[in-house]
Length: 310
Image (cartoon, rainbow, N blue to C red; front, side, top):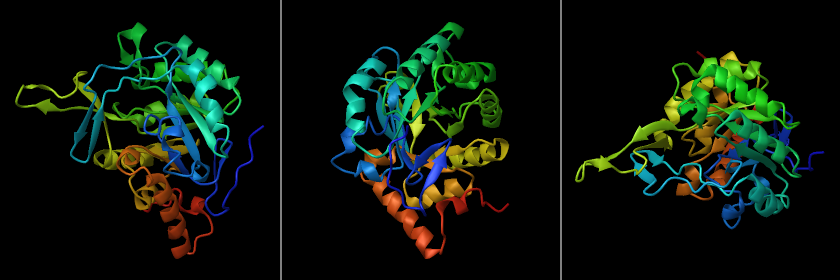
């Protein structure tokens, strides 16, 4: 049974059965498990918290340097560092249970079996409202090819997770593909309850003095304002091709950015890199979206979804 959540009728949204007081969520990795930002924001005001990605066993991540600021964004090659699903359930989840906010656990694995095992553990935990499946991870049994770049692998991951959980399943799509709508349609057909997009774009940065990569991993994931136009285009394309809800991610810094994604077809948004620049970004975006409704005499934030005129 879902915990009661305070709602503002004009801002309330529902994603795959998850009732949220507003469409503003935090993006995985950028908000930790919520506790890290509790001194800066009122967690109860958020629509949802997507926690840092969880694997079956703890991971140390990649060696440093693994974060690099770029023009209009940042590169990260943290390497999915996390404490593991068991430690999350025991040490982090009790903190989140104090708040009236939807908790979405982001999960990943190196095999179908690992995805299923993590999903099963979280489905048996109290206080998790949904799972977000990161399919940008490397499939170690297929030479490191990303699950999300292969339609068959993306579908199989989705089916494996769905088979192990009663919770809504959101599949997070990688932009590093030829046609993201193909993957979106594939995971929808495999049972996904919603999709979120985009994950980071693969990029790199070079130190001219040493002629070596700035990142130890050589490449990393590009996020921030620089990727917004790409993310917006992909959200618009996917929203036209699937019937399930779309959650928009990518370079959202302001309320106006968030509203653009909703006009393109997203029913909710996730705020990522903005949290590093301004810890109160989510609060300001929520306030800005509410002002937009008031200034435009709109009764519901849902009325703006998919209203792009072309």
